Image 1 (cartoon, rainbow, N blue to C red):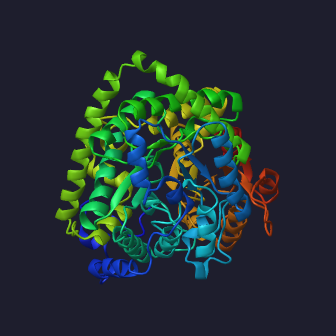
Image 2 (spheres, rainbow, N blue to C red; image 1 turned 120 degrees about the vertical axis):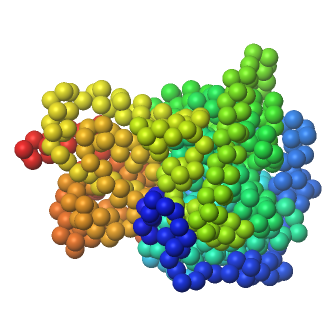
Image 3 (cartoon, rainbow, N blue to C red; image 1 turned 30 degrees about the vertical axis):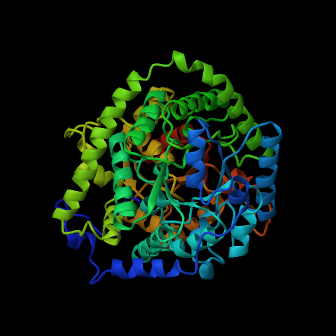
Amino acid sequence: MDTLPYPMINSLTRAALFPEPALPDFDELIAEGRQLAKTVVVGPCPFFDEYGVASESEYKRQRMAEGAVMLHAHLGFREAAKSQRACAEIHESINRAGHRIDRYGICLDWSMGYPRAMREGMPKGTGLILDDDEAFAAITGAAPVAPHFGDFVMGTPAALENTAGALKAGSTAIGNLGQYFTFDMPGWDDDVATTSETVKALALIAAQPVEVIVQSNLDDGFAALFCDLTSALGMVLIERFIVEDLIGGRTGHCYGHTFTNPVTRLAFQRALARQGATPGTMVYGNTTAYGANEAANYAALAGYLLVDIHGQRSRPTGHAINPVPVTEAQRIPEIDEIIDAQLFANRLIERGTAMAPLINDSAAEAVADDIVAGGERFRSNVLEGLEDAGVDTRDPFELLLAIRRIGAKRLEEMFGAGEPEDSIPRGRQPMVRSDVMDEIENAGRQHLDNLDDAMRTAIRGAGLTACTATTDVHEYGKLAIDAVLGELGVAVIDGGVSTDPDKLAARARDSAADFIALSTFNGVALGYLKALKREMAAAGVDVPVFIGGRLNQIPEASNTSLPVDVGDDLANAGAVVCRGIGDMLPELSAMATAKD
C-alpha cells in the first residue's frame, strides 16, 4: 500500500502522519490483549501429542539439533472437508514413503480478514473460510503436523478474533504481520482499527504460557517493493523491535517468493542467521520463477530447493523448506501435486547432501556482509527519522501505523542505506539490488524487444495516460506493467494496491486516464471487474480496462474448492483480457493510432 490515505509532504511530520485528534492508548490495547490471554490459551492438537512438545519452536530446536531439513506445505481449499482430507492424505503419503512433513501453512481466504460479524456478503477469494473455533480445530486436528495460520490473521480488522481461534486450535506460529503493511481489505478504510486489533493480537500472543511465533512473510510485506535487499533485512529488525522489544513476543520471518538469484537467496538466509533469526518459519518457494510450462518449472523448483537445503544443512535457522508444486503459476495445486512436490524435495535432500563439498559460500557470505550492514543502517535511519518527526518509537501502535502510512517506496527513499543517486528508482544506489527489480526489468525488456518499431513509435508518440492498479495485495504484476508502460512513454498514474472499484474509477476520472490496466491474483477477477464497470459508469468514465494475472474465480453459489478460468466472461463483461503483458501492446498501438 503505497498510496497514502493522507497526503505526505517532503518534510515528514507527525501532523501529516497522524491527522486524527487522538490515537488509541497502546497501554490499554496491550492490556486488553493480555487480559484475553487469561481465557484464550494454546489448545491441544495432535502435533503436540505426536512429538511430546509444547510448541512448534520447541520442536524446531529439536529438529535442528538432529541436523534435519524440515519441510513445509501450503494448503487450504475453499471446501473445509477437502482441506481436512488434504492434511491427512499428505501426512500419510509422506510417512509411507519414509519421510516427514513438519508443518502446514493453512491458506485462509482473504475474506477471513473481515470480522466474522460482517464477513457475509464481502468479496471472497479462493481460500479456506473458517467461521468458528470448531472449524479452526478441525483443521489442526486432521494430522499430527505443526499448524501455521498465516495469511489474513494478523494485520487485518479480524486480527484479534482470528488469532484467538488459531491459538485455541493449537497453532503456535501465527501471521502474517507482513500483510499489515501492504494489504487493504476491500471496502475497509479504518487503518486505526486494523492497527488496534493487530496490537491486541500481538499482546495476546506475547502473553501465552508457551512460545508462539509471530510470523511475517517479507514478500507479502515490503520486501517485494524495495529496490534494496538491505531494506528488507531492515524491516526484519524493525518488526522484531516492535514485537519483541516493545510487546514481549517472538518473531519468525519468511522470505523466498521473489528471491531468484541463488547467491542473494543464500546470502539473505545467512544474514538472518547472523541476526539470530532462530527458529524461523519457512523459506517460501521462488514462485516468481514459475511459468506456464510445468516441465520447465521443475528446473526452478530444484534450483531454489538446492540453495535452501544447503542453507539449512550448513547454517540452520529452523526455516522449513517449501517445495511449491509446479502447477502453482496456473492454478491451485491438487492434493496429489502437493505430495509429488514433497517427495521430490525429500529425494533432493538425500541427493543434495553429497554436494556440500562442491559448494563455496564465499560469494554469498560477502553479500550477506552488505545486507547486514545496510539492514542495520536502515533500521537506525527509520527509527531516528520517525523520532525526529514526532513519532513515539516506543509506542508500537504509532510505529506500526506510521510505517504503514509512509509505505515502502517513500520509506526507502527517505531512509534507505544506499548512497543518494537521483537518476535511479528511489533516488538511491542499492547496496544489494533486489531480485524483483532485476526480474521486472528483464521481463519488460523481453516484451519491448518483441515489439516492432512501428508499434513502439505509435505508442510513444500518442501521449497516452494509464491508471494502473491491483485487485489484491499482489503488486508484482503492476510493477511489471508500470515498467513497460514507462519505457514506452506512457504516463502512469498509480491507482493503488487492493484498490476499491469506486476509488479506482474516481482515480481514472480525475487523472483523465486513457485506459485502466488491472492486475489480479486472488480469484476475484470477474466480480471485481463487474463492480469496477458499474463504478466507472456512475463516474462517467468510458475507457478500456485491460486485465491480466490469474484470471480465475470460484463460481458464485458453489462449494467447489477450485476456481475456474473466467477469461471469456471477462471479455464478455467488457474487459480487454491479457494473458501476458505482451497481449496489451498491440491494443495500445491501435489506441495510439486511433488517437492520432
